[in-house]
Image 1 (cartoon, one colour):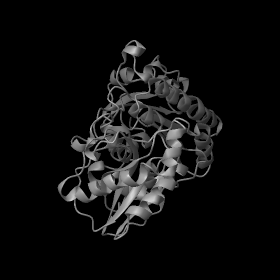
Image 2 (cartoon, helix red, strand yellow; image 1 turned 60 degrees about the horizontal axis):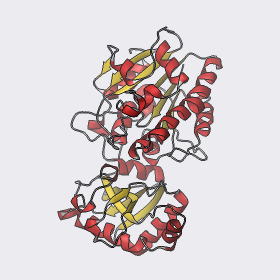
Image 3 (spheres, rainbow, N blue to C red; image 1 turned 45 degrees about the horizontal axis):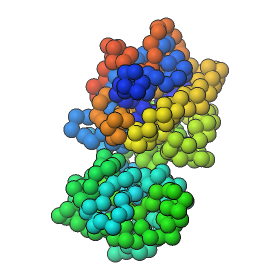
Image 4 (tube, rainbow, N blue to C red; image 1 turned 180 degrees about the vertical axis):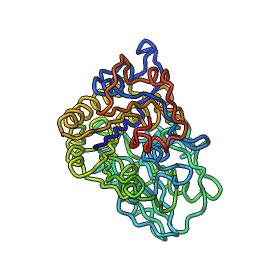
Length: 403
């Protein structure tokens, strides 16, 4: 038996007037996902437990079968694992976005969060700026590490216990002074302000501005945590697993769970990611692993940026360049197989951030071919009688044919 789980990060949304009351999932041309829904099982799943922040670490942990209430220690330590940082017990990892703040001569507190991703900055440009910040700002038990695109890691020895950080994608267009760290977090606030002084007139940023690109002119810290530990996925499920993705967070979960995490050339975590490369890598992984978990970030990024056309395009690209070739392979591989598609959480365009709403899923078992007119959408999933209240149980139910 082969298993494939395709996670379209942030695909779920709300009905939009621009789409005549449809959601992007309802409006997108996605015959592969619709095939799963029409011939399989549809339902809703709560991937974010009540009271927890709807972040991708929480939701993906749940989809992979790990109770977030037990195992969520913050996303940054997972990202640190992916980067190759071996956190010591006294070290705290903190996500360091490189962001775009307004540049009108105002005081740091009065600046506005323009873009949490600095125009989806390339990893090459970001590396230059992060390494410069590390040289200019760090030392004395602190260090910056380059991640992917705008997502980086700050490691702090014996850090003050401060957790009341703001997520930068939640405050786009807002004055940052209302969201800066305070009290024990003043050390983070100081570094963030100093990073603006270091970055805003950096030659690379001046070059970016001259080209019409957004400056990556400040660090923004959030989501701290200590070194994580997860039970082995193979020991827990009896299956060998692989994680195909672009972003350090999901790679980190896979590494901590003892799953194989292959490198995918051109996988960026943005709309221009190498979709077909992910599909090809997943097909290679299926030759040597029982279960492949494919994560695609593009729809989430489009949601954060309120880009309707890009969200529609990302869903259609996922379907055409990943779901279709994966299904073609599975239908001809000679093994029984199961496929499931779902988002980790919604990222509604109108809100530009994650929500805790349950997500629609569709699961297909080649041994049990159903027939219906259902499509993969929020409405059809809601109209089914299947609701998974504890999202971390979905994986076992998918594997054990108890959906």
